[in-house]
Figure 1 (cartoon, one colour):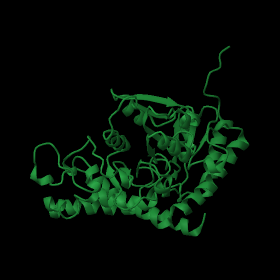
Figure 2 (cartoon, one colour):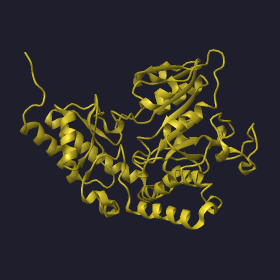
Figure 3 (cartoon, rainbow, N blue to C red):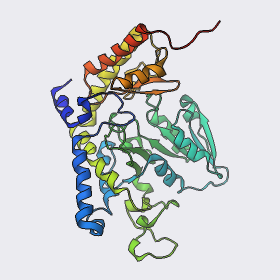
Figure 4 (cartoon, helix red, strand yellow):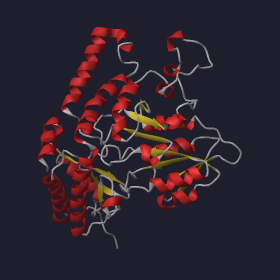
Length: 380
């Protein structure tokens, strides 16, 4: 592990008591986050309602500006929201089906919450296809393409440029879900030319829950979301009746009162990721995921994670016999991973992970596989 990355380990208290390999689900909390939360309590306790005009009101944009350089977005193009589902709903509310253009096309491997949202829209038809067929399924009937940058189960990196090119050729809009790429995979939403992008600070950005975000390409900045609220009003404290007079700028993409405590919690992880740089994080993660993948292959355990490191995100899935039960054993031993059906055990090293920790989890899995009776009963 490079010394410049090793020095960051002391900033994450949980590393002293666990082997933390679950950053694709919840990034470890930085030590400084407790100070940020104390700052929130102090501001609330001493400034009271005055805090709104002393910074709270603009926090969804200011924290969004901390996300922007991590994903190659310009300042003022990202706003913070409670979660990705809400961010997707805001985008969806900008568009109405016209004529035959009433389809939402996405991959079957997309995160279920996103598909639940679009599948519940009475005026839209949700079409799902295997990820390798996504670009081919987009046609003149397609309105929106909500796609994952990195698939959450397999960690496969998708061919975003091909999908964007096809979607734009037929007049459709792409909403790129970057939850499993932002903070571990270098990319630029500007260069990818996506119309919108969503993600969150929960995972690789070490910012905790309640910190979804929405990127809007600057030429779409004047769209009018129907999912709106008083923060998007040009004069919110006039408390005027509808229709809404929308503010210019990124705050038009907001709605109700923002999640201030979560925004305080997000800032320390974002600061650290920006200080290290996503390129350095990617180099370290790629070396560790290759180490994990080779160890799984040597044991003969199947994996749905791509063998080609250029197609692999930050996670390696390994699926030994009785993987669900093994995952519970690992958790009981303070080795933090997770299990997903059809994927097996997901192992996600981050910049604070050492090679020794990766070797240890694979050795532990092997010891469990080879050293205990089978958990499944075989019947004739």
